[in-house]
Amino acid sequence: MNYPWARWHNGTSTDPKWRVVAARASHAMSRRVTVGSVVSVWALMFECANQATPRGTLVGWNHEDAAAALDYDPAEVAAIYDAMQGKTLDGNRLTAWEKRQPQREREDTTAAERKRAQRARERAAGNEGHDASHQVTPRGEERREEKKPLSVGKGEDGDSRGDTPEPPSTRSPDEAGAKQEPTIAGQVARALIAAGVTHVNPSHATLLRLIGEGVTEREFADAAVEAKAKGKGTLAYVCAVVEGRRRDAATAAGLPALAGAAASTNAAKRVGATEEFLAQQREHRARVDAQRQNRARAGPPADPPSDSATHTGTTT
Image 1 (cartoon, rainbow, N blue to C red):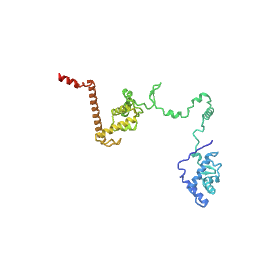
Image 2 (image 1 turned 90 degrees about the vertical axis):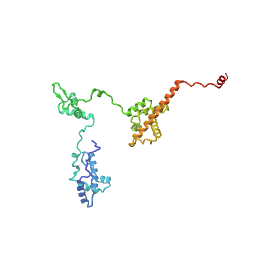
Image 3 (image 1 turned 30 degrees about the horizontal axis):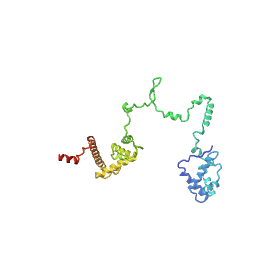
Image 4 (image 1 turned 135 degrees about the vertical axis):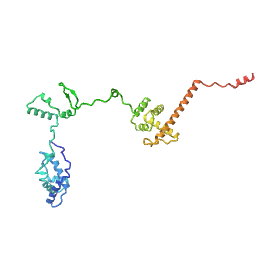
């Protein structure tokens, strides 16, 4: 079987035994062999052993090929190979391979292989048959069964089943059936949708900022009416109208415009003054509308007498 990967344990590159191997190779070469050279050669040996048959051996290893791959002297690679004997090598076998590279929990990788292995186990146990195959717990069922919550109940013999009872619910029937109240952003979004505004998103950044600055649902609704009248009934345009009105109101009241969500402590006072000014504007519009309605009910004013009628009456 081809193994495309193997376990490389933490601390392998800094293992102290590489210094011992480097010292042995340096003595054999009569010059210094670095620990980095030892680790590099070991990495090639590791990959070779992972692909070899049998696995964990250096079948197919060649000093010259390894030296060419690492741009080393073949004699240095041979010296490192010899210095590793008794430390990490036993002949051409990596000594700790079976310990550090255990067999996989399951060698069978397909359903057919698993089924063949299952039938072999059944034949060995003398329990061959279709019924027995259905009694085998599928892979992973044990873990799922362990995660099932325990419940308290009465079995046929009257004994309690389970160790941990479920805590009684502390919610009243009214609380369980009650719907969660919408947020302020949700209420504003509903009002805008009812006014015909499109592309409404309660999480819109500008919408949330304006709500945080104290803009009321009524202000959004009024701005929505204006936006729809202009044929621009989108959330972005409504927010722009609200900001414009607030800016105009603050300017008319001699107040600086709000600085956004990071307004200082005085922002609340400025918002209050702005809202008061807007309320005065609404009252003024209401009085003007009332006067217009009164004039409409009273009808047009009477025409003044003409000059000829006045002259005739004087002559008579």
